[in-house]
Amino acid sequence: VTQFRKRNFEACINLCTELLHLNPCDEAIWTLKTRALTQEVKVDFFEGEEEGLIDNVLDDNAISSVPRPGTSLKSALSESEGNRVSRTFRPSTQSGRPMSGVLRPGISRGGSANIEGVLRTPRTGSNARPLTSSTGRVKRLGTSSLLSGREEFINLSRLNLTKYVSRPEIGKALFEYIYHKENDIRTAMDLAAQSLKASAYGDGYWKVQLGKCYLRLGLFRDSDNMFKSALKINESVDVYLLLSDVYLRLDQPMAAIEIYNSGLEKFPNEVSLLTGVARVHEAVGNCQLSNAFYQAILLEDAINIEAIACIATSHFYSDSPEHSLRYYRRLLQMGLFNAEIYNNLGLSCFYAGQYDLSLSCFERALNLGKDEVLADIWYNIGHIALEIGDTNFAYQATRLALSHNFNHAEAYNNLGVMESRKGNIEQALAYFKTSSTLGTHLFEPNFNLSSFAFKTGDMETSFTMGSKTLEIFPEHKDSLALIKRLEASFANL
Image 1 (tube, rainbow, N blue to C red):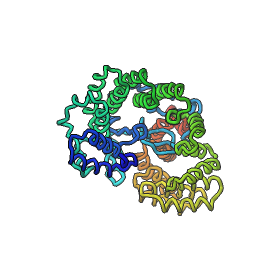
Image 2 (image 1 turned 180 degrees about the horizontal axis):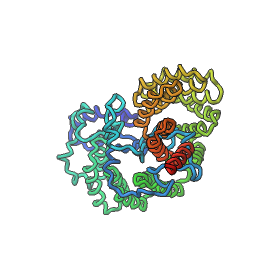
Image 3 (image 1 turned 135 degrees about the vertical axis):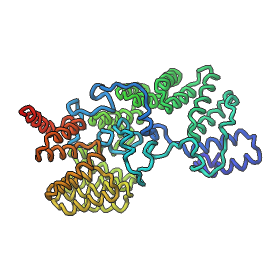
Image 4 (image 1 turned 180 degrees about the vertical axis):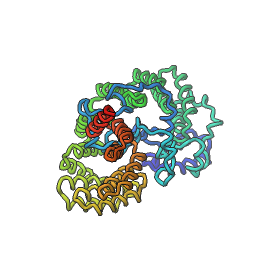
């Protein structure tokens, strides 16, 4: 028990195994070992939630194909609504959402990724599993022998669940083991359903667990009913978070915000609920509202890393690098020492006019960076070289970015711009086409292709690429003007 409380789960499991060899019927030791095995692999459900491509492809829930602007995570953002952020000043992720200050699970939800595009992606060291979750926190059934060298502790196929229904103190530990360790959701759901029935449907714990099983299986309406029923028995922050996640999966961000607000009425200034509201506002493009909620989070939790990073990002893309520099320095003071922080510090220092500090920050970022981060660091260094007019160094830095990640769409676009300035039109067009293929969320390569086609007299190609640009960025003024000129030319034919 002491080892378990110290979170020395390996030592706790070994001690329990020795004791079980002496007395296999000791239920207390068996329960303790079950809990220790669960805690080894258990992650925070709300931070560990992740939706793979298969979840999107096989999702058969009916969702409106033409939602009202600003009410869906899957529709394009519009600048004309409220305080929407412009893609001209703040880049977007592959899902079409504004660039966030932190990388969190599920950040690509609502994206335009399709199975054909993923199957065309080459298998590399950084992209080896196209159809499943990208991190592997949740293992698939039948792979436990590859993930662990221990012998099987509980044989689920021979388990008599009815035996544990009347023993909630053991049944709860067993459910957590099946759900988190074995990832056998159907068996866990069977145990939760039988236990809920045995409690005469009055145990809120089993309603929440059954709702979690429904949520993992994609039965969103059933999980919605379970969570609402659990709230009537016992209101807790976890249930509000789970219920809001159901509506986010159903692409109803406004309904999710209502759930968060209901939770905040019961639990005022709860950080996890405020964080959920801020994330949803950020996802639908209301960055000013999101920033306000992150400020409220800092009033309750002054060392909240996500809030500090997101506020810093918002200030940077709002043309206030001096303010973002203060927040990133705060993260350094808190002990965050990684390549991403130094990369952001370097950009903030450069645009704040502190050029000497900018170079030293990028040097530290390169020393600390791993392969998946070095591409972005060299890309940013290339951007800074363009800002100071050193095109040769910018070209070399951009090529170095591609050497670390040859699927870096933004780098291909910048190479195309530099080649076009040198007069290498064919090479520039090849880079723009590659960038457009790899970065379906980028509007710049499509506009560049449209502009080149217009200058060479290929009106049809120019109109096609201009239309693609407007699909990604409907308010792009240069594309709107170009399409207007093309339509006038077509009308005169």
